[in-house]
Image (tube, rainbow, N blue to C red; front, side):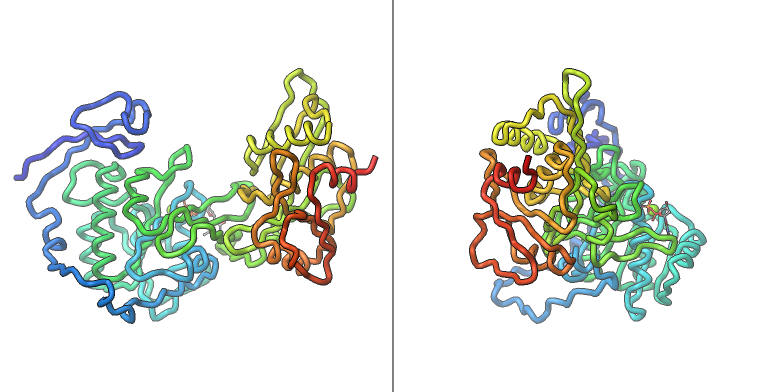
Length: 453
Ligand code: TYD
Ligand code: MG
């Protein structure tokens, strides 16, 4: 019998210590250390690490050997992954419970071309439950196998007999390896089972999807450890009150991390949304105050989002500022610029800002629309719904140019907008017919032109 060793792990960041400590010296969290028993068996990683490796010159590596990416059968997933699934990659899909992780990956397993075999390893739901879900999704793949298993050694046996071309693990927190004694979901189990899977993926060129739970504060449970090992980290997010769901790449060794995949959760599973602006711009009567449309870009796609503001006299001495889907500090900065440059008395007003659709915007191009919606609410003057805005606002009130303006203008024209407000500092060669392009240099200018008193 091999000797058992006890190590204390911080469940937040994965730091290890020989003794228990109250406060983690790495991440500063209190009371996160948990004792874990590691069975140091002599045959731990032997079978795989015994493979003979040979250093090769990079120029001598045959690039024709690189396999093509696998079509996931779901366009939004292909895009987020940077053009499909890379063989041998490990893709972690994280998200809150109930957001639809299992649904998404089962849908992926069923929508792959029927010649591709998939092994769906479920540690959370029974085969009957998965079958019921598959029936709801109304898709079939006769080479999709389901197994209820949590022990990695057993899983590898199933893999050996089935030779699946894609593996889905639901979820990594339920897996357990014989090498380690601690309970499933602990840091050392997560690290060890993921490494075992990773070694297998690299050796066999089989892509593996892992489902990971996230903790209350929004980070992946057993987090950093996992993020280092895997190739791609996808975050599945969405507002419970809305039907749509976003898949975002947080880390991607094979593509950009700025892409966003959008779905709508329906009775019969997730539907891809190819034109996101359709769900993000709400329909309303013409003269509603406090609304402006921003032309933002997420990844490669332009996005039209609606910014809504409510500015009202503050009842208490301390004015409230609240923001949903937009950085609150940035909102405060924009309000300060409006006070200083336009002479508006906003310090006696409550300001509420909302980005519709439960979306969070990071693109600074949304600044201009945010400011316009605030002014619209402040003056009780509506903005023409056929106008849209793309501009970043600097500290001195200047409207700064934003990236890929031509793409934004073309998209605005396509969606039937009549006018787009952009920065005067954008290069002059922007030339699109069929839409009025209004260039402005300073925030004071737009105040007088849109809201004449
Ligand atoms: P699920 O995939 O089980 O979430 P996770 O694996 O992330 O915990 O999704 C559960 C939710 O999805 C559940 O609340 C019901 C909803 N849902 C639908 O609305 N339509 C469907 O077709 C399916 C399968 C699920
Ligand atoms: Mg699930």
